[in-house]
Image 1 (cartoon, rainbow, N blue to C red):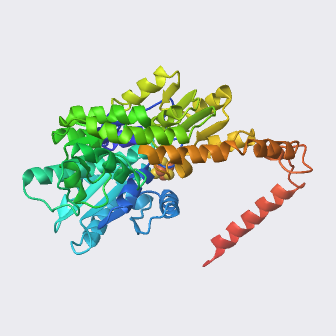
Image 2 (cartoon, helix red, strand yellow; image 1 turned 60 degrees about the vertical axis):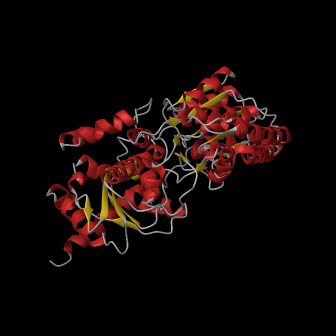
Length: 476
Ligand code: SF4
């Protein structure tokens, strides 16, 4: 598909993706369809229409997943068949759909996302009009063979929108963001738990700083507020395109985040260096509270951490500060300059940090590390539980709680304690299900691969042939 996409004129788009999101040991995503990241960012925005262009099966899966994760919005879709694809009619259909949808009374922006097949076929979304009656049109290629994780796909759209908004702001007056702080702001980059931005705002307040609109934004005019900051914080360090836009707007960018006592102190120092405002008062206020929260919520367990959200290193830092032994952290996201402070800190604690970790690496680490708790993705958690190791879903459990400040310390300790306490229960489950087999021999009574009843395949083939013949005969 890569070769097809290049032959169809998508080399520039693919090269840009390859530079921003370098490939790892696996050249295809090992988690959900990456386009989900872009789709989710679009669906979370007010007055923004999101339209998919791709195979119906992909669109079905993406629509299902987005509604599973609570999107209460319509997912637009321009269907195609091999004829409309080959004749170039699909592009015309997309163009017509965009004109139909782009009504200024309804929308500020229309986002069109090319999935694998239209990207490989060279459907040129860059030729769509840049705006229709003032409604911005953003066309992006997000193929599974070009974007390694859904996390990075969030940046594909966020970066494209920031770029558009930056050029608008450079050209003249723009709409005022919904909430404008009287203080200089810090823009948090990354999709965060809703309680985290106000928590970080409280930590920054003694410096005379506030938290501005985050990236990815919740509506178009937030993009102007995000760009208009004193400093940007790449809390999720893989937002390469968004960070590039922040830097193009002349904003300093800092890495890491305010996790744990040491992490918060380091982060506040970075913010102070970026803004020229002393962090002494903020540190004097925030650090004792975080220290007390960590002391009250000690974690005594050996834990491996892996995930594809991009916050794995921050979670590992907090676990270690709370007393946990973390031999391994794997993240499906790449290493960047903005994750370097966390990587270096974790390496200094003796933790193995694996960027662009494959599922195989995560599994091997789970076996080697012999953890009392494995935090990870669905296939890893499933395997850990089958082995009787307590396990925790990173996305549904860890990412769904605060991470920063004293709230983060308390929340993480609570879920770790709840899971590690269940260790005996897991051992009982393993012994209970012992000898029931696995794979094709799963279940009572099977000791071998189940065999088809004699003649069944033949009967089914004949039935299929008869049905096909009957269908052919219709109308003759
Ligand atoms: S084929 Fe491509 S667009 Fe479709 S689900 Fe897979 S990665 Fe996503």
